[in-house]
Image (cartoon, rainbow, N blue to C red; front, side, top):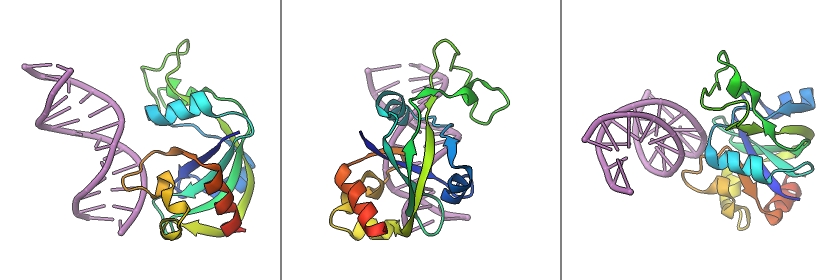
Length: 151
DNA sequence: GCCAACGTTGGC
DNA sequence: GCCAACGTTGGC
């Protein structure tokens, strides 16, 4: 079982949206490194930290769980979709997605400044300068610490 | 709104 | 295969 961090701009899709929907497709990933994590390593039952980017406050705001194995991202096949990619073919899809299911909101969101100030969490990928990956691996000790600090 | 960081594209 | 140009992400 592995741990991940998913970034989302709350104006596009927030933790409250996920709480309302209970479950969602994580579509639209169009970065090869993120795709490789998603397609090759994510499995049912993996745990996800939900992070709000491009907003105030920047913070880890909740926990979710991967609730299906990876499958082709069908939005890449749809010319009318903003994530359309003509190079992704039905027989050989370029892009993949997973479903995530809401677990809970943190009682206390862990803000990016708090992450950077914490002796353990400061090593998270999301705390590194220029860290743009929208889907990142998370170490178990980091996941546990976020749960501890956020409860 | 600015811009650093980084990925992708395409000319050569 | 190099690298300049360009586009995007996302913190500040």
